[in-house]
Length: 391
Ligand code: NDP
Image (cartoon, rainbow, N blue to C red; front, top):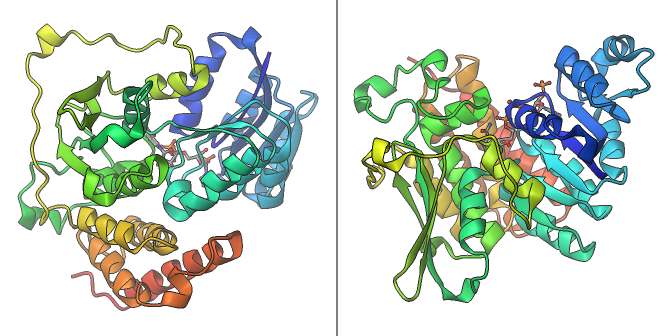
């Protein structure tokens, strides 16, 4: 039996992971399941899968979780320290699907006990990619990408030499506002940005898809995970979301990965790697689909992409600053403090402010310095947001 833990079990990726596990429960022993605030879902899943421990991030919810798990045999715990303790429990495979920079520390802890880390939490790679991959190397652990584009690149690279790669192309649906006129974007509401044309995902990543901040994170993720330079990475808008990524080799060949927009493919690939098992995903009928479209992204419509190239050029802890500023700007938009287009303006101004600070950006990449860069990125963005007039 494989011992597995799922961080962010109550979210979209976590639930898709449990869907796969639930189809062959005899093959898995569930060690830890964690959630942020959704006690009912966490307790129900912990009981269904007889988890050793269930952890809720919000400490105030511990009594509720305890009550829900009474008599089940699953331990209840809460808070950041409990999340880290759960990540330290021996497991063979750990899904990292907490949203945001909060996913980094449990991921590092899981690697330290040698687990294979299935990484949906792209923010870990953006914030501290070198630290994460160095930790994996140090403890002989493996990080497997779960983001659909990165799983696609990973699959296209099986048996290939990374030195023969000329370019990596990741695709983007264009999000909820792909066809909106620019003037209308300034007034886009949270509800409008929270609905994706092709993928069913958590709210934050759905809004990030509309602004292309999600693709910006993925550009940096590609750079960090595969070690390719920023000049080698491209984005193509592909409205159908069926080609997830393409890898171009030095002989001119392009390897594309196609699949239905269903995260259970990438999750299942990471779960069964290096073998392939049957997965409950739609099989594409290409004759019926008939046509695949590719469009160069419009830089004026998606300023987040340019910011990602700036971060890749800068390196060091600029990714931590970028991710924190992006998250604060996203909070500002969700809370109605800034407009949709002002998210990119806030992040750009934070980069203008903090990237020249060599002592901050080029400090050694350890947890303390990552926390400092994250804190400064967040507080600078929050200060800017307070001074913004939304109208
Ligand atoms: P969701 O918002 O659906 O789920 C997030 C999970 O994280 C939930 O379990 C939530 O708990 C938990 N959580 C939130 N805040 C905290 C916190 N501070 N501490 C601990 N746990 C917390 O997100 P998704 O599943 O969509 O995304 C998860 C990650 O996967 C993100 O990094 C995203 O970018 C990435 N990803 C997602 C894809 C998708 O299709 N959804 C595709 C590719 C990558 P609760 O709900 O109980 O509050």
